[in-house]
Length: 384
Image (cartoon, rainbow, N blue to C red; front, side, top):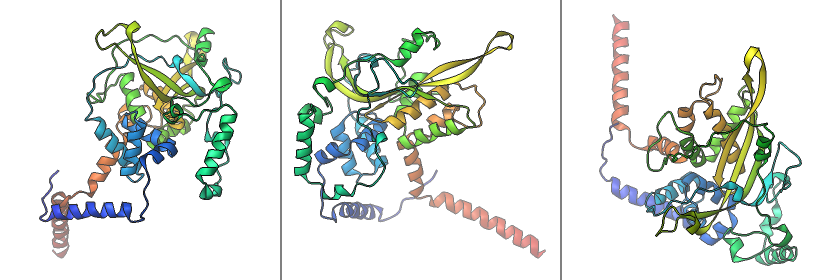
């Protein structure tokens, strides 16, 4: 694709950047990064997931710089991520070690460890709360004191996402729902794959893909795009109808090998914990047996995202199952890994769409010239 330089473009661009800065400050209001970090939890979790960088403060800074534009904030944070050196790889994380804050199952009512509702908007009315107009810091402090009296913690650890409740409200490890279903023989055994996973941040995705590459791409995908395709899979003539076997929100401990003695798990160094949402969906499928006999078998779709990112994680688990069945004939495109994986990336999609705003003078002029010649030929033909 050809472009032409325009004289005076540099000064015009500089003025455009000045105008952007003016638009940001003209209301004479400012919002601190700490305020964004402490109040816009959902947006921060979305940006961290799509940029593949678990850094709440930096996500808040990107949101401020982008004036709340999610796709721009993701672009900024992913660009910054690309400049960071990779000094260590974490050890393999076992999600059974998760410190649970929220844990529900739509498949079974009574699950070992119990249903833990945690913090969720699922149980509130979606009505505007006009009282928030009058919210004052004094009211917040009073409310926090009431929570503390009930056993809630208001510490620096909580602000950093490391701890939320104490005493009898503090949850530790609980068993996985699908572990019990497997123990009963209700789920097919899974072959352990200990091969080194692909790293799509270092090497471009190649088709056909391995599951590790698909899961990485899905968890980096734009939340709206992943949700839309997950929804398309469900409503595609009933081809897919999952049940959430278990949804977890909690904190995972992260360890790295001791820098001077790699490979020794006993000398692992604990470097902190991250909040994640994990979903394991149970998806029925009919299996052809011998003599024309048919049986229902469940497959497990998996989703995991940074932060509390529940809708995306569920949709991700649906698409994980769909993409594993590449040979399935379906009226939707959700089983086509190339279609799904190349169209859910926020930076790639917004970048390509946005490039249409750049000069296309040469190519468009050639199209106009072609159209004019065609019109002229038609007019000459009609006049003969």
